Length: 283
Image (cartoon, rainbow, N blue to C red):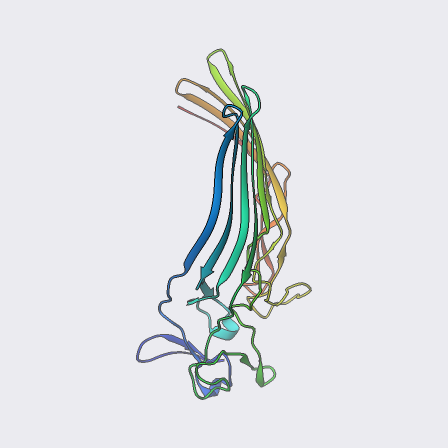
């Protein structure tokens, strides 16, 4: 692979789909167009039982077009990131919110969303050099392998029709209970909560799986990020301008990965924050 800088424009160029001696194939763009989103949605907001129960919800179909996509894969496109107009997605989903004042002091609330997203087209990065096997204007489908001294198949970085986008869990929900009371001049409340994030993947579902790969040779390996649930609790006491609060986060001490990647040619994970607690007071 050969990396060069166009002497006229200064635009970085790389040769991702042919013998390095054949020249560059892609002129990285300075800019890329905006994406667009059309949301067709129907929703409702209701209150029941003398305003003690609130039920809100919506159902929607979203068409998200030209999703701005950043490309970073040094073995293929050089050691810089560039942006392009990416694929289109259709998202079908619904969400529900419920808040209930069960007693004078106890409030329960929760919300849930369910989404199905899929890619509806398959754009690509196109060749721009007549010396490459891929004709000018055609999708680059090969990359030169120094090890094999020949061209090998190249994965389309912009996905395929029907692919599920990255970081797109089907289901997410949260639950929360709060109890308020007063003791003399002190107003207090205690609250507990749970947040659930469904199973998702760090790359589109059409990308190569990273399962079993010990030494990544690409920044695009796809890893599964299993569903996880975290719990928290808060106690607060206030009087006049005084305010004291104690809270704890991730009380279940979940070590689920929030971000898994092969961007540094190793499998790296960013775990959920360890269980912790803190107290504070302020005027």
